[in-house]
Image 1: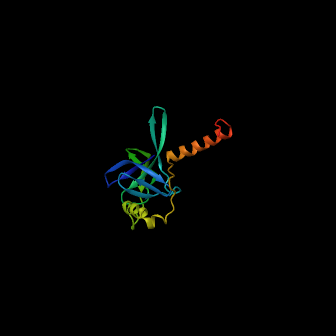
Image 2: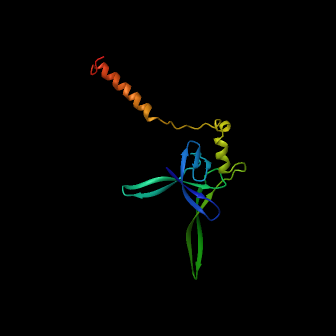
Image 3: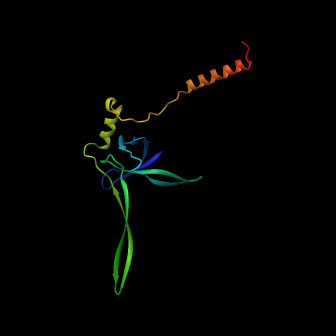
Length: 156
């Protein structure tokens, strides 16, 4: 499971659970969907301390009106400070979050559009395979029964 830092407006953020599928990042709580391009939008790694050690979890930065995850840019700037007769150079790091806005879609509209039957089938996504426990049990039982007959444990 991954986490997302969802920017709800200019001053409000929330850490939410997100589902990462090939090509998309889904926020089930709000019904948002974001594009996920692995090469361009690499997530930050969130450090969680557990009783068994340190666990790393991907953290995506998501903005409510942008269908692309935010990118973090870190810049170092040197500032000269003058105090009486001395000049000090101080290095300051600035962190900027860049979220590219798409004029056509918002995350809500993107989720609705990609889930429709006509357009949803055009965009290739990997479907999860759901195994039915009963079917697996029947297949394993048939294999065991065949082996027991071949090895003459059961006489027919």
